[in-house]
Image 1 (cartoon, rainbow over the protein chains, first blue to last red):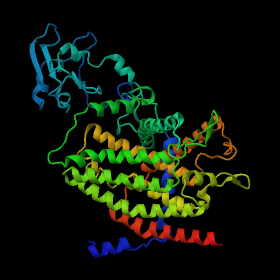
Image 2: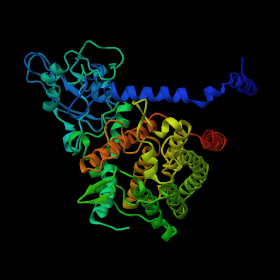
Image 3: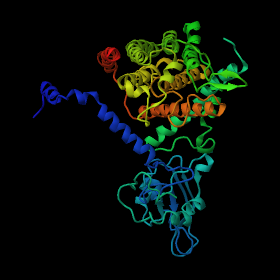
Image 4: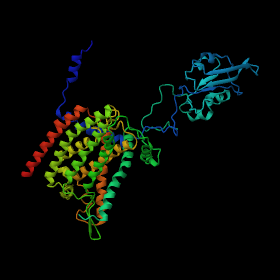
Length: 190
Length: 343
């Protein structure tokens, strides 16, 4: 049932506070005690970013990696499905005949414009060979447009092993909501 | 009055000290604020971010001075100085420590030994509002104008309560000379409780404290600045060093108010068992000065502490508090003090 304006006003006015309460002295003292507790006893929440980082959720969508098989060959067969699926048209593939026997095509050139990419992950969904994947590596800051064009070699090595190890205790375990931290908890900070 | 080299040194020292405290205070403000909010505060410029105020000052000094079109030039330029100068001026009558004797010559740790110190302080601190009013009026802009109006109205509501609180102090101490007021606060009850006026006049002390916050435009009474309502308040149209002057004035006024508060209610430079009021040695005088500074620092911290605890009052609440609560309470306190004095 809808509450009329008058009723709402009446309800709000229902509880009259006594004059002691209206002095707010107790509340002011309680507030001061609270802020003092924060000031003296609680440690800051801050992650000092350039020096410290906390791991992203492993499901976070960051920069891409072109996966390779055991022999170091890229898994990509240049089917161009990712290029077709990409809503921002940031993938450019030049296919060519594969130098290996087990497949017909391979990407001669594979380039992603990281400035155009919106990190939607559609390319990963579209790929039939699990060749392209979005990693939790955060977006890089570029100072030149050319450096934002990632070629095949760069993409193959985009998520190096040490990065994976760096976040190893977070990687692959947490799949739920983003990591929760209490104030002063520095266990995840690297 | 003979002016010796020592008097000049003390005067220079006091002004220099006040100006030196300000950067530290700004740093402390940012650090306290940060820690209360669970942050770290400045920690990039210098160790513990201690050089942050220096960086800020360099920034403000090198900024372009923008004078908006249509400002009332004389008042616009006068505003920032009228905030800073009275605040610094009021410090002249505050006794920073007890007298010392150097080479047979009495050197007071006070710039001007005025016999009407209390009145001088009240007069000076009230002048500060003119700077805000001039700045707000001359800016030719709506937000500063509203801030100026607010500031004036706020000043009228609080000055009365503050004056009446001080009247009670003067009645108890029997003098308007700040030296005398400090002198009567030396000694103890039962050998432990210092005879500070805050114990004799708790209501006056509370009123003065609240009024001091309003006088300095500090939260919860920072309505003339009210950045969430009035952009920047009275200094919206100011930039560069003129803005810095307002800023400096606010912090110097805080120091002055804390010093006056300590002098009136918290025994000034005295501390039972630590400072011997009858001594005239240089060491003892410096110790009394350190005690005074420590007390002032506590109240400066209290300013910061309260600022990051309480939300801003609404304008009508502020007026209500001033006229309907503080002034009647102050009047009652004066009458009660009178009765106690007769008995």
